[in-house]
Image 1 (cartoon, rainbow, N blue to C red):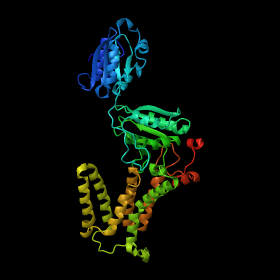
Image 2: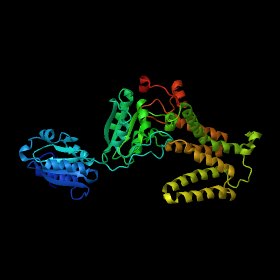
Image 3: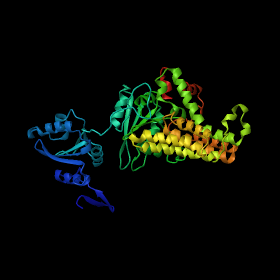
Image 4: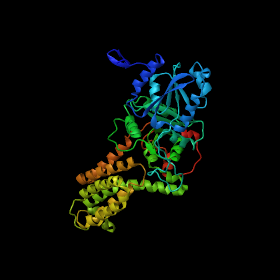
Length: 487
């Protein structure tokens, strides 16, 4: 193999920055598998009487701009050509976003990220011009984070437009976007965003160190892969460890409050930290209405989430102990014959609801309405009249199904579901003792759910901060306090 040499028994690729133009060209052709990769373009040209080659990824090339730049390069005369690349940049490319590359690692990184790389005879460094135009969808409101009032834009899968959406809302020199590359193969762009004058330095240092020390081949599932790498041993706790948002306005508000935001390329969601259970429960709708309305929406969401956890376990517990039910509430007990044990009915409906969710996702849009009608009839009247389910159980499970959509964080919704199922099973097997054990397991999961750069998952309840706790329950309008933002 002409382009490889043996080094301590291992094959080592020769440096494409060593040797003459022809040797370097051959090395690049071998390195990029030109001729095998159909999407890597290679064009030979003459610039100022010197041989030159352009390498670029076809899908990232912005044709109009590159054509004008190349037309200008072709017009350069031989006597005008500078002797070094610095003179070439100053004279012929002062207007473009241009970089000089002096290592093979950087050449691979910039080329595969979409930049157009030029190798010019007589110049050691490779010139990289930014003509990138990433394929992306248009900016639109996220389906899961919709608001009744407010802006209708949302993040997309490209990192640079997402940064621009934040810059549009915060025009401050203290807004910092740091960039990191994560993944040996993917080299995914990860940006850490923060307000320099409002961030807690120790929190920023911890986030930087964790990202820089990540050892992985690729972030195949972008933000979810990054989250699991941050907490590799906490897979058994279903509660979310980060607050996610696809809304630029929510992200900007968190930055102004002193939070750190992590943007991952190819992901339309921002990771916000430090976080807590109370901040995850917040919703953008609360801030687009007056404080009293926002407070009502917030308290309703919190109360609904708590009821969603305990409504079916408590109902099952009361069925086991009907003597606990006051006479005025006798109507909540099941009067009709029970053919299937209540706990089995509840568990079947728990799984059936998720089955219907997955079916709705994979159902073509033109069939969604008729299939929803059929599902409503089958799981409504027919299941009750057939004797499989009792009407009271169908009622409570209908409330549970609707309550899952009162908050936008899907991870939190499934965490509530898992602990509701655990509490159901324990209550069915051990009665009040099982119900108590299930509640303790829920509390333990909340207490020991790890957070990054924060005071705790239940802050400001634990550790207790009365002023901040009141703000979590009641939506108030207060001027920004710089000291408070850094805390």
